[in-house]
Length: 572
Image (cartoon, rainbow, N blue to C red; front, side, top):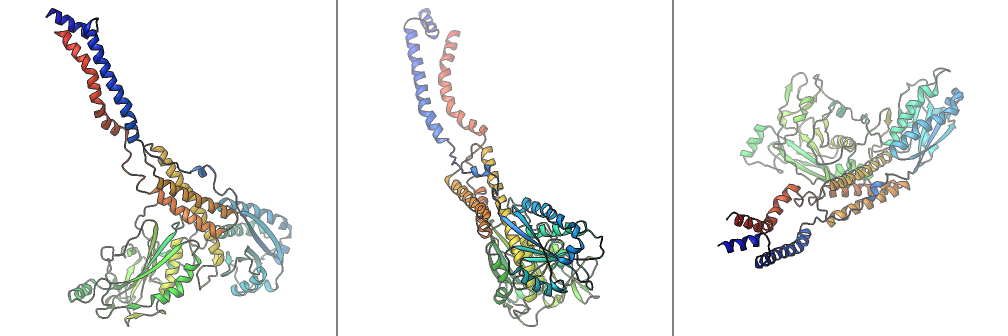
């Protein structure tokens, strides 16, 4: 026993003799096994847990946007009568315009502006009326592709307007300045307002109060729309694809709708207009005449599609009240927030990368006709149309139809309101202190189309850079995020389109710049919200420890077993 205990003690204490050789052999076996497991397991573990990160070509973000800005020439034609009255200030006028117009436009629009100042003499100061002025001034600019602004002396028998009047079909506009007294200052009294109006026209009118043609929409400030998943918060719609859905809602009271359904008359999208015949409308001709000309002008900015449908048994969520004073059923303007009956009016949804606007033409039933909208003070509004911000617009027919069909002529007023509402939703606005002579065929003057296209292009380029920068920050902040090759291809395509847009912009090719910027913005947005980026292939380090510790515990137990055995034997 003593010998065995001595041998055991000698073996545990690694003494000399057979015990030592046996312990050394056992230890070498354990160490060899551990080394083999480590050498074989670490590469396998490293390979199986490696996070694949495709290299993203984001070096373009190190450079600023719009490194090269194109030139933009602005012509200012001052009436000889104006300059004679203010001859002492003629030399300072060009310097004032360069400081207050050129610098501001270059800062906000990324355009290098040059000012061309001329003095002209025209008989009768270009007539007294807007149409006469427009015709005579168009002959002076001779269909020029550069913006021109005329400063005229206004006729004494007509009131002067403190605003810039822009042509309906040309790239020019005019101010009419009063000549009241010899001591009036051209710089102090007039050039400041001229500079502000010109900057707003060139910049696209962002942030202005909207068109003066839309008095009703201004009176009925619109309601909160459903939230939309996006990184954007802009005055313009930056989505490349825009979908317009025009819906004719054939109204019923709840009692009439329930009775029609119980009797089996109609339902869903095919039913009766007034409990009898179905309603038909000539929407195809109306679109061709009033909406499509406007859409064609925006073809280089948006890819717009148009759909139409008829929905029956459309009952209002808020019942209008009959007003004996007005002899009509009335909806107050503060109740328009609940006009859309979301529980019963089922409109289709769309993808996140396609902006959809719903335009609703509500045809009231005979029991609620005529139907009008009143202000909060109780006065009837001139028109029954209003905008729902980021959602669409509504037009309420004032009375029910005597016939079961709506002709193209009856759709003229609703379609004109629709175009005006679409302008506002897209961000096409008339700046403050500017009055536009509209092109009634397209509702979009040439000067406004050009400035809007430039403004949207700049916004899309900046949004693309912002989205790619956010993507880079997200990836850098999560080291274990998997970046697949599909993401790299998407980023590369967005970067290439972004470079093409900025290159086209530097050549003043604003059409191609607009198209490339639209694709770049869309592709960058798609990549940022790709589901694979936010997959469950990455997780916190605490989870890793919880997973890997059970694999290393057996090895740790094997190595610690010898010391525990020796300790127990020493106690015997």
